[in-house]
Image (cartoon, rainbow, N blue to C red):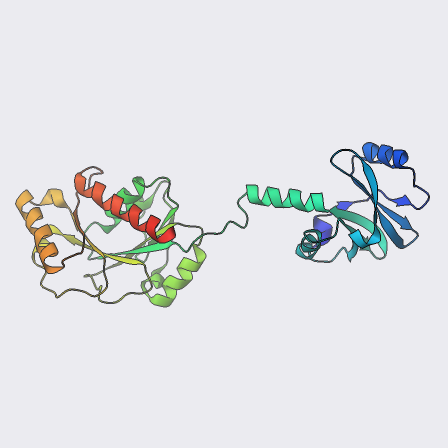
Length: 296
């Protein structure tokens, strides 16, 4: 952005003969300005300024910097944040605009009010892995419905299905996010988020390796959990047993027990498709706790 885009055009100027403070004060009141540069032809002599108490005083030329209208605006802002009181803008040698320290502060306040420049921690990425039909999408949607205050994004590596992620949920489809480099690029584009739920490809859980996520979560049905025969994966932090309502209470309890026995220390959550249930409560609380812990 150029200085010409943020300056006040057609500045009110005074000459060396205009040394009467009352006259300068009336000029400021009539023009609704608080700074009046003093020039003698092309030479800059100083600037009349009005304080918060209404007093008018003359500052030397050392408090005024002359810049071209094509100067980058951020350069002018930086100068005003140091010692200068006023930037007098010249266009082909003529005084064409003015930017004051008060203007710079007003621009800064407006930008902050709009959230411009807000610094975010890196989003927490939770990778949800599991075979097709295990209910990964349903789990994600139920989870987000319980975290309305969190800036969350669904990063989908499968083809979008349409209805499951409709509504207010922010969804980004990127098949390359299944790989480390692709995930890094996607996260870089989503820095405004607090949480990214990465729905990995429909496949048997391959969680022996990470791809740059913060947490891996294996999603298994009760029958899959009961039949799990693999040794402990090296790189996952939780197991969610889904579709708990489609199995008997004994099978669900047995599946959860089997997972805990094989993978001691790994939290296991048994959830049903509905929004309620203690398992869902515990799962969502775990997600929220992990996000807060990593973002401070």
